[in-house]
Image 1: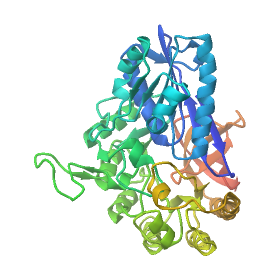
Image 2: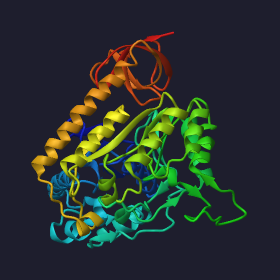
Image 3: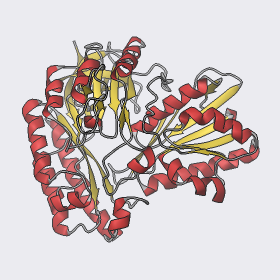
Image 4: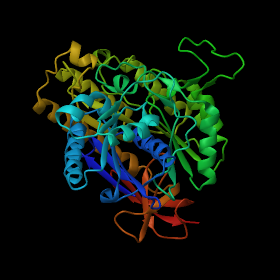
Length: 474
């Protein structure tokens, strides 16, 4: 599988693109996915829906009858790259007029009119809840129309669809447990592009994870915009929807998946500080295969900025959650998201973010400059008043600090023996293998007896700020 990663500001914005191939048939589908893990998971749902209509995926865009790009709208730079890609597709379409080009996901919902009518870069637009309608939309394009469906749903979870895994022979897979988001963070467009929050039937989640394990996968990542608010058969007010059905919260779901097999590692993304409860942490401590890694976005270390962001917690609350993690899971790695230069951020408020990083000492982080998104509360209520130069300087300070913490974190692992799940050969050398620890650290080591998809013990001998280096031992 081909994968692109474009990093801004060293550890900044990540833009991923994956392509996949299955056997040849008369109809070919080409998919690219950009942005968050949810988009990659959605693309596998799309591939499953299209496969029922006779489409197999291909890596060669020139062979494709249908080209779909699954998009991210979280930052302006991501949208610019997608537009550039669509322009390339438009040129290919001039050589193959029958090719159908479509855009999916968050950017599709937000820019449907522009992409369809003004720029004429695509033939069809489908929002995150309209993937079942894709075959019909393609048929509409075949009649000479431009097709669009961006209707949001209150109950669509695609729970009955078994995703087509686009990485045949893979080790790790994404499993979507919920869709949408009810958190109205002032900087975020997701609630407007993915709709309200709804949780998927836990039995279908366990079944999907079981099938993945039986097919050779050894790691799953449970996905949701806010996994801690997963609740099955429970309303937002804590009321039971159907007394004849069990209720399941996120901690209980994690235990259900952990019991699929002790050889199946379980991760999750993303947590929200205001919703993470101790029962989740106790479940992680109870099961070895629930990985010792939590991604807990903080965004800012200043309570006033957090209030403007509508995050629902204070600096003090966040630090209490960090303290609980360390108390219940002493060897847990913690990563985060940080935004520099949010509306009205003063130098003192920026310093609070740096001091919080000093207090937590994150193992790694995703760090960004604030990028105003249309239709968000921040756009309506606040002025994007921090000069870009100031944003960049503050981001550089954040990145420089985090690189030191990442290096220090890895240096502490030198001399330890880590259990590593082998993902395959190292990208830099076919004489080395690579894989991840429970703490989500990448490890590179010379080839030994271990094969892809197996667990091996690796003694750590060296490191960089991003990678552990070691040797396989018995």
